[in-house]
Length: 180
View (cartoon, one colour):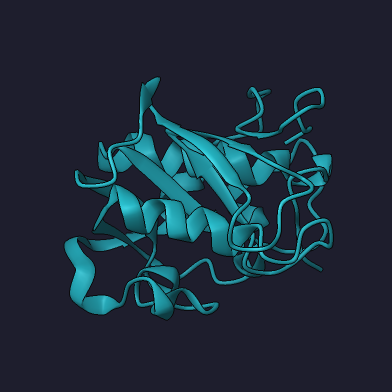
């Protein structure tokens, strides 16, 4: 099962992305829908959310232009749910529901500031995604991994953490905020 910006079932994935970002001390974090179990029982530890809990945490460094490309890829099949949809932390994305694929992202903020397409951003993510999994190899690959954490798995970071409410990070233009 995939996720999309209007599916509130993946709010726990967003909370997990927050935990990854906090642990790594990065500008942001990505967690793709294809790495998340389709069923998560609210109240369980966030570590139970993952299909591949042994994935290690990595930091990928890419420019703002590539960050924006990643968000366009995430929205490629909108409004259909898809496995490459990114749950994000540190970023807020405003997108047009009616624009053609590849031209949907209207505005991106990173930690409250407009995304600078020429600036490098450090993004925490599971290693399988950091190596370009789920088609993100078209935007980055393992050569962009700039930091690894020795024997630190995504599961170990999420162990003992539970879902908590977070504000939406994907907002459809011309509508109320998407429930993420």
